[in-house]
Length: 416
Image (tube, rainbow, N blue to C red; front, side):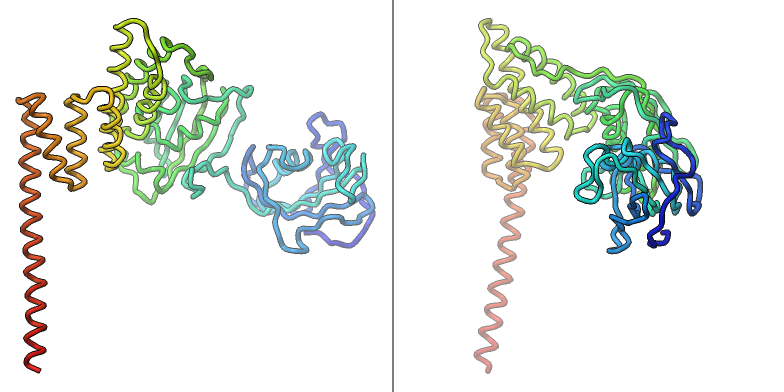
């Protein structure tokens, strides 16, 4: 940084104010390196000295060697910084002379700067990077905004989205297409979760560059990309049609919406996208659990959807190895129909996986009472019986080993 000595500062440099009205001047004190500059919403770290025009200092981050970090363009700092830092290169030191319009305005700053005061910022751009969008803040999804979008309309859950994407690795394009999908269900179109998370934050016309690595690229195995690679996606949001923010109000609307949700959930389940399918099946139950219908046809359809959604929800949980929740939702479905063959069978599978063999056999035998020709249930009973026998053999071997060790210990004691 520059000298801390107090000196009178002359207004000079390039006028970088948006309207070129002399409200913000920039003078480069030390050139930066490279050509890259911070982009909107990048995370930026700086050292700075804040001075009055007479040269007196009122803030200096070097005193405690603590950089100041902020998101560029998000109004976390004075406007002079959002405007000025966007013009800097890595390692650059620049002096910004700001009129009150882009500094502290009529309010001033605490007891350090009065109202309507021109101030000076000497800023060193130490580092900058894209924004971390990964749920665990582990750097696996980094986004940089190349071009800001139009307006403030961004996708919500179930919005209709048209997105242009291009994925590259080591300079080679491996995924280039324009895709229409429902926000939240991008997995059904082989869109990486990290890309979809970014799409939720994009307005129409916005262009972003996203860097994926670690667990964020597990879904790209079909492209033969190494697990330790970093891939780059360029995205352009072409169109956003937001879904209705309000939930269906009448029970008839809830029934109609549940039909759509089941169709979408079934497609996701078939494609192996269990976590997303779960959200659809849960919403069906939420809509219909307290719904009341006057017509027999609507009542029958409501009952079917409640049972089918819970049965398929159980299957999703089973595919993910979560047998406790799978058993729980099977029992919930059986509250509506205690003779539902599919739900009893799946509960039996849960008991088998949890090694509750007697309970599993009981469920499979109940299935056979409902449908004697269910071959799968007979096979599951055979498997349970085999597991019981294998467990008994292991148990006998365990007790045999324990008794042998005890006998050897007693023999040793007698010998002594």
